Length: 217
Ligand code: SF4
Ligand code: SF4
Image (cartoon, rainbow, N blue to C red; front, side, top):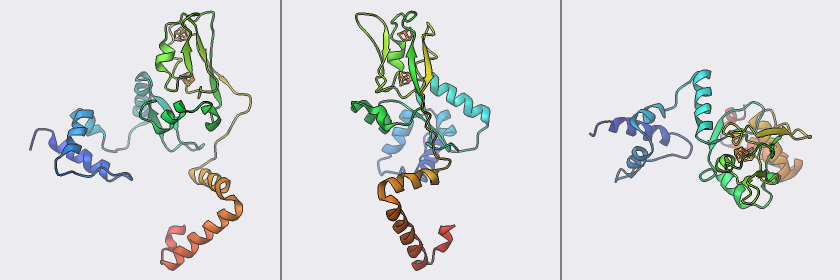
């Protein structure tokens, strides 16, 4: 076995135990992919473990420096924070293809530029993962397209002129408390209250029929 092979095999097993899975192949191509993406040190770290608040904050800090959009779960009790780029994240890449994508997001902030101090360096344009910040060729100043800006704040820390800031929208949108509350809202919008009752009834009947009432708790 090659040096460090076990680290990658353990990582593959770990990923494979998650919802989407990452099974072994006959050719070992999945291990080659992991080796291409992760150094042995990163692969060792990649296996889930409890981390301290300090470690979480330093990971988020690192992600911010790498230009990734920090997206928490859409609930007041945040369950996770995704660190996303505009090329791989399904949500952000879909966002870029829509004419008025902000209509489909719940964001309480948007970016504003102090045009007097903006020097047109283009850092914000490079950092913006959704094509909202653009430097005008003629004016050499940035403007923010409010139909596209999701208020992620990624353009702010690297502006050399401190010309970018976030402003709160007048009507605050508060996300649901928990994931169950979120799914309840989605379901009632999709199915209406009657449809929601029908689905709940079906779940209860199925649980009784299959002897799995413990799942209802
Ligand atoms: S990063 Fe700042 S100075 Fe540079 S173009 Fe954007 S707003 Fe202007
Ligand atoms: S706050 Fe708006 S303009 Fe700035 S990076 Fe995020 S989406 Fe782009």
